[in-house]
Amino acid sequence: MKRGDAPGDGPCLLTGATGFLGGHLMAELLARGRRLVIAGRPAGGESLADRIRRLLGWFGMQRREAQLEFLETDFLKPGLGLGSGEYERLRRRGLAIIHCASDTRFAEKNRAAVMAANVTGLAGILELALRSRARCFHLLSSAYAAGIDHSDCREAPVRSLRFNNPYEESKALAEKAVSATCRAHGLPFTIIRPAIVYGDARTGRSLRFNALYHPVRSLLQLRDIYLADIRENGGKRSAASGIRLEDGGGLRLPIRIFIPREGKINLVSVDYFTAAALAILERPEDGAIYHLTSRRPASMTRLAEFAERFLGLSGVEVVIGAAGAARMRNPAEELFDLFIRPYRPYIADCRDFSRENADRATGGAQPPDFDYAIFRRCMEFAVAADWGKKLF
Ligand SMILES: NC(=O)c1ccc[n+]([C@@H]2O[C@H](COP(=O)([O-])OP(=O)(O)OC[C@H]3O[C@@H](n4cnc5c(N)ncnc54)[C@H](OP(=O)(O)O)[C@@H]3O)[C@@H](O)[C@H]2O)c1
Image (cartoon, rainbow, N blue to C red; front, side, top):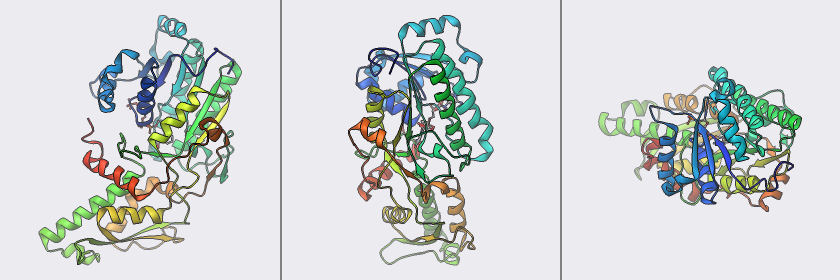
């Protein structure tokens, strides 16, 4: 790194701290005694500071609030809506910028909003970095910025021109903008690309319940609908779909999950993500890209077995090769197929991620293998938190 003597130390400006990964980075940076400027927005009538206070409570870190400053910004306004005095004040701080904020929705219908937040909004953050003479810039990207043209994904600039969804495309565009701007202005930078992040593997705690959680929640909802039908209405609807109670009390729910090939689901726990990201942030290499991915990703077949075991189900079957062309067998199967549609590219993924830079930065630390004990802890937490409704 060129600017600053100790790029890994000192105060940081963090965006996305009200989100899953940004929240965890904030907690860990605070635990290590760092001072942070939190840039973000109010929501639901709550100020940014109040939103962060609630999050600090969840982490049991209320007493760390004194290490924080709050900067209410609108990423889409010119100059982020900040006055020149504000830039001058930030300039004196010599900040490292960690840009975690992102619109993480996949659906094509959200393309405009996703591009606005992840690409247009990024221009404002980069301007902030330049005008405030930041020490360095760290972009939270995604392993899936790699797109779909190549299956051997290196810790190198994106080569693909095709992507599964606007989210992936926006992350690739964001990476390009960061590396071009930072190189042009001599601002040291890194790009951190996690795979799919789930809760804390040791405790099961999580702040978000999408991705991995979504299909399990969908199966649980279907299970409860059919159990209620059997127990309260005699089970006529269930019987018509081949759904019935088994002798041991479990529910037979014949649902096929169609995937084009065996593929893999690349999952990393949030505790691994946080430790690895901190190792990078503390000793960044200018221009380096880091894959925070698993070398031993799980398979859909294995996850379906975990879900059956956790939910007391049988009959969930992963069908490889049918590519969704088969006629749906029953309304439950049809609904489940609809529920998991946005995640389809990630449940049978054939992309391989090399991770030499990440291994060097983290001393070779790997995410834990995703076994049933971890699955159970995470899902028990999710159910107790009512999938996020009872978090705070
Ligand atoms: N979670 C994963 O599995 C995963 C995997 C790979 C990469 N990533 C990357 O990691 C980063 C964090 O992801 P996450 O899972 O923590 O996402 P998240 O929980 O959805 O949080 C997103 C954060 O971005 C902010 N944000 C979104 N749209 C915004 C906008 N238009 N203006 C200002 N702020 C906006 C949100 O602020 P509000 O709270 O105000 O909405 C929130 O703080 C993202 O860059 C994502 O692409 C995540």
